[in-house]
Length: 307
Image 1 (cartoon, rainbow, N blue to C red):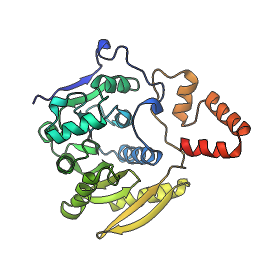
Image 2 (image 1 turned 90 degrees about the vertical axis):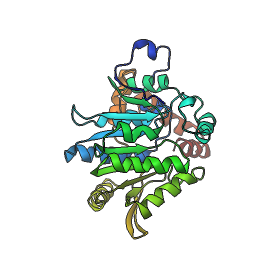
Image 3 (image 1 turned 45 degrees about the horizontal axis):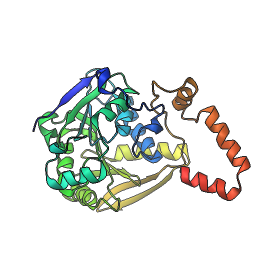
């Protein structure tokens, strides 16, 4: 199969007529507050400690996590690579993966990903429209500092994705594995903990949805993360030991979010609010009014639904 690798500004015709997200929240996908905080913390710490290296995402959906990651390139020579099948079922490596695409991602298109990404960034990442099995041939060993794995949920493919992440990561690099504990993704759980038990992957921390690990030394990351989140407050933190490995459990859904990427299509007031991590004035006023007028039971239900 042929790997399609592109970067830079997409031709206007490529994304013409597609919805343009006005805020980060409007980009389709799943990215919970705890993981927003953790992505921002790890990527910002790499920047502050002048860790150099490329970024890699295996599995992109509509681009929500890619939009966030794209803001953390620290030097002109660094590269962000995204690998996904997008809307090409012929690129699926086997029938099981093709069925998974049809069942879960039938609306995914590369054009939608590009439109979403270019709403927040001037240039596209390097895009490989291909199965993640091409990553070892296309991404140099030891070249990356941060890898996000969120592609297939099938054990055989996740096992290969983790092996690829190990090869492309630098010694201090970090890998993030999505859906490591979801009830519908037992293959991801099996591949994740097998890597811990057999392949030297060392846990740094886990959220409800993602596993953060390294093949380097996790303790400096863990100690700094624990100290900062404890100082921030509104975070639930717990140390555990799993198979002889120290592990930090993190819950931060009530903590203040980081500054989110600002869309070039956002109204001025919304752009200012997004940059500060606060809701736009009109939205905030509407929420206050609803809280004042609705019965308490409905107010509580709406707040639970928003969370």
